[in-house]
Image 1: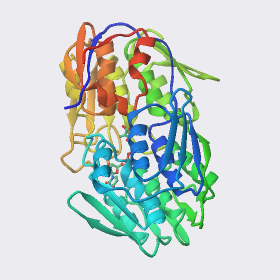
Image 2: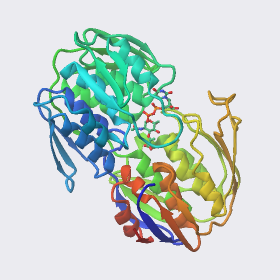
Image 3: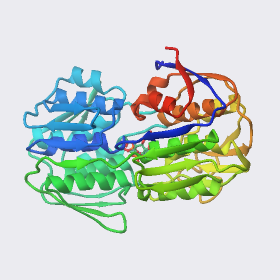
Length: 440
Ligand code: EPU
């Protein structure tokens, strides 16, 4: 069970301004990249979230000296004394994260070996690591599955490879990049993911001395180099957190300025937000999102890899769609099992049904299988307070939004899970005039 109990008195519009800092899905990877340098790196715009703590702990276990100024968001990483860590220590530190799998390539280059514990991360499907292990084997690593985790070795180094991904996986693309930059010779990655966070990681690696080119057809070429140095980089802002606050503004009939938000990484979200009936204003210092009054409109949306509508935008938006006029359809094509959070919304008065079929558009790889991966939302339905439990990071934030939009009192259990990816969300809620009290 996850800790943290929050009481929410709902029915008040979220109003005010908050700031988003660096992306949860870039910062930990840029931290791992620092392992590849011979000199120290400095990462800026680093949010105080638990994933950053977890990865800092793991890097320290491997001898990386870390200094973090949370107020300024500046993280210094000095990898000049990298060494092997004890298996039990790694296991104890890594519990809640999938990032450890990305340590493999850098550690194999630095030490010739790596140990990866059983991985955590949100329970949103099987979340396998088969692509990662296949990639590492193709680079020349030996993979040995043991009872506590996976031991990898590459005593004579790693070599460039031709890799074709079965699906444009974010993690598998990052695995390839972090391994290929120091592998001997050329690597060609076909079917790569091209999310903005990946392009930001490419920028980090290029600053370190890597040679990487990204073609228009999802092919990435990497020329391995003998040495990489430290970097100075400002992490791109978190477009998932931005969209979460935008959906919260819409669902509660509020008005929220998200300082630090970038338009260009969010084009697809902004289009959908406007089609549902939300209003926004892109400013120099961020984006303001608000409910302009009148009915919200239902729509059909399908999650997809970039530049499609992100899977992580889906859950907060679904809460806003419960307030839209008519039937909306959301087809989840990235994860097979990401609608578990809708049970709690139904308990609060929403009308949402989930289906195994691919609804609303093209069929996806989950279509002929037993996964409830399409949702039909019928609105508008008034929401009422309830006692609910947070299932995972994004689903949990959606529960929070639903509780804020609902009339009456809700108790949301397990909110500590939200700290993984939403910096200071309690103080941000208070800054937006939400009536929330932490009970435990
Ligand atoms: N997949 C496999 N085998 C693998 C790896 C992935 O089958 O070895 C499948 C997954 O099961 C999934 C699909 O490929 O169905 C896509 O997974 P991907 O590898 O792209 O996801 P990830 O790298 O594990 C990152 C983010 C997720 C985000 C996805 C998609 C991080 C730490 N996590 O996960 O973020 O949803 O990309 O954009 O970067 C979140 O922030 O809450 C979150 C879950």
